[in-house]
Amino acid sequence: MQPKIHLLPEQASSLAGQVDSLYLWLVGISVFFSLLIAALILVFAVRYRRRAPREVGSRFDSSLLLEVTWSVIPLLIVLGTFFWGAKLYFGMFRPPADAVEYFVTGKQWMWKIQHPTGQREINQLHVPIGVPIKLTMTSEDVIHSFFVPAFRVKADVLPGRYTTLWFKATEKGTYHLFCAEYCGAEHSKMIGQVVVMDREEYQAWLAGGATGVSMAAAGEQLFTQLACSTCHKADATGRGPVLVGVFGSQVRLANGSTLIADENYLRESILNPMAKVVYGYQPVMPTYQGQLSEEGLLQLISYLKTQKVPPSAPEPPAAGAPTAAGKGAAR
Figure 1 (cartoon, rainbow, N blue to C red):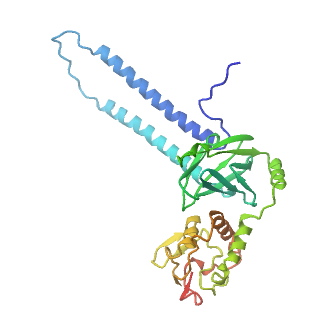
Figure 2: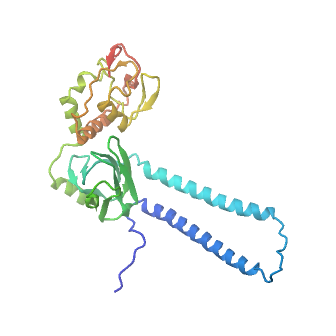
Figure 3: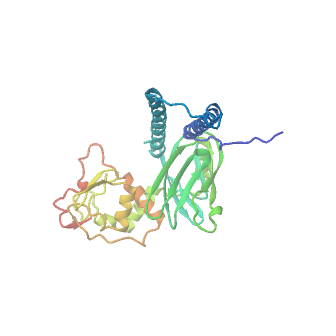
């Protein structure tokens, strides 16, 4: 039996088919025009070749229709390809609202992965089939790149900031996980596996592993252990801004600018509190640089994400508006 030759990796995610379609379109259009240009060169070289030493070439009159045609057709192809690629790009980097968030930390030379329910893995990621999975990733040392060819997803994993990607596995199986960025002498050993399971099998796998504390619960413990609640009180009487509902909200800063409080902003506020001081608060918060591991930072941020404003509650003044208690206080 002859072995099968696969030009592309197997398709095992909802994005894989879309990526392959665009890739094959690009290859096809490149091959078509390459052959067309080569054929035209050959035909013209034969048809309009010089037949006698004294032969003078015939006069050529330009054609507006021809010039417009060879300009408009490539333009339409390029624009169509651009919008196709842009739509796919935004779809690849905007996870669905119901995506389940996992956390990945790259380190020479391993992938440390933590499930939202607290289970930890090294160089393995177990996920249920048919569920959108969002990965929030960072690095403890150098630049890495999280790459699963069967899912057609790849994103750089950077020290000091968070990057994300998402996928929805459509086929059960075990798939290769690579680091696609040269990260050191043993870069080639930084590999792993993504195991896609039925939802029932995945729940059984979770139940069979060591019982872990969820990311948000671990973050709440850290929040209490670090005494963050002494300044960040829920009733706006603390020295720091209210953190209930802060994630995803618009924050007004002391310099007059505004931003959306995402993972990177929260991380910077913990490690470098003076970088972006909230309007109405004094910059007296100490830095926690060196006191928290990457896992600890992710746990704290996961906890803050769960601090949402109750539907019936009034909007808290966490977005930076000064309060009577907050004036003269620190965030």
